Image (cartoon, rainbow, N blue to C red; front, side):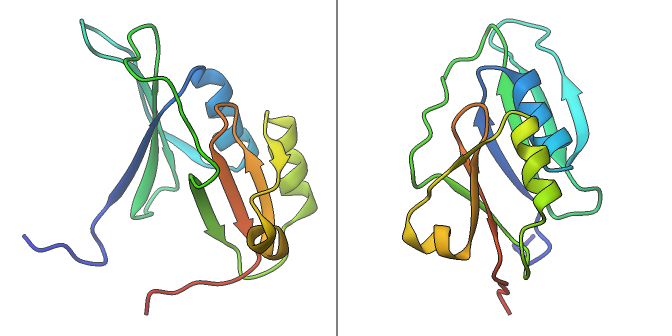
Amino acid sequence: MPLTADTHVRLARPSRDLAAAERFWADGLGLDVLYRGAADGPGEHDLVMLGWPGASWHLELVGGAQLAVAPHPTAEDLFVLYLDGPVDDELAGRLERAGGTRVSAGPYWDRWGVTFADPDGYRMVLCTRTWSNA
């Protein structure tokens, strides 16, 4: 089957503290918990999948006692959401209350949005611009 614009995308990353990461992405940003699982055997890990029902992507966070790789975010690891308008102050406040930290992502992203680091240090940009692949 060929890849198409409707192909589902999963962005997976490790987390030191799944509960803290879930608070940021669910309570802060407003993503739904689509699935939660616990390790039930050697070499497995706990995970939580977050997204919006019906979207063609979701975020998978893996963690727990058997986590093989610790998070190693860099300044270039950006998860960008194009809002096509201003960043809502209430949303920014919720992200901070949910464990996010406002950070700089450089002149371009600072000009066109607000950047938050999640509890593991990965960065999410709420961009005021729009984007289309069309």
